Length: 397
Ligand SMILES: *Cc1c(COP(=O)(O)O)cnc(C)c1O
Image 1 (cartoon, protein in one colour):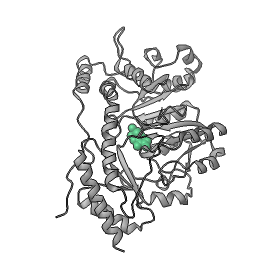
Image 2: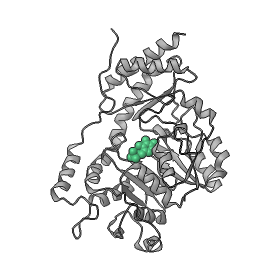
Image 3: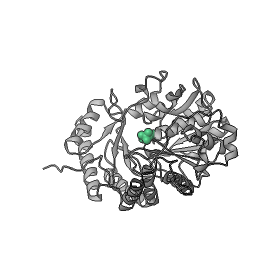
């Protein structure tokens, strides 16, 4: 009998008692709106911002309604306007080009490499086309950030980091989100902290921070923030920065604060699972694992591998056969976008662009979530199933 996995790939762990207690505290007093505070009271949203800024070593932080909202706000805060071109990854998730399109700006896609990071040669070649790069650390893979910043600094490009999959990760000891001008994080259920929905934005630039806070809908109540620049900075920008409401509420902030304190523990647990699956897939014929450079500290909340240059039929056979044994794999090479696996050519609001190198790699990317509800035994079993099914299809010429 073939082994079957019966766990759920979308079930996260329940919230901790500390998070539940914090939520009940907010529910009991009823002041859910972030600016609804009693005299002298420090609201949960403001405290979350203060703590996240300290955790990341950033001067300023803003909590918002979603990761996608943080990205769009970052673009607005650095002055991107309708019609501007913005460089971004060809391999990313739909909210990234979506944030660019929400301003009427135009995404210019940069190739992905076989290590699933932005292709720095293609970036250098396209550097003259835009003054902003929205860099997506898609699926938690960090490119050589030192080299990327060199290219962007030399070309006068402002870097916004999409850290939806790299909260808790670092390159050469510097946290993801602290290399560029702005770092954006998502707090929705499938990322590294779970508020249902939510986003965080960090920066060291006082004017960017002030604009972001005004944009998020601060109604001139910015003095209630604890990780904001001096009020005099707001005086410079408050009359010409529109309110595009997208605040975070105190309930979400309350359940996030204890989760952020646990982040390091969770990262260790994720990586134990990732390493177990990776070890189980080592040297599977036809399957290429993604290299993780020495300088990269990652968070293994999902795992990817390449079935490079496989025919679509064979690839689909692997996905189907693993699915029949309870292992849910996502493929980025399908003709139609399914769930979150859309590709740059699925985003038809962007100008059509030809990226043959990315086409070849995207056609081979297989992706799997690794929720913390999986035990290490589960992970070993999942790896055995993938290994067996990839092997069976690979040999069936
Ligand atoms: C989830 C995600 C986002 C946006 O986050 P939301 O909170 O869902 O808006 C941005 N980029 C990537 C790569 C993501 O996976």
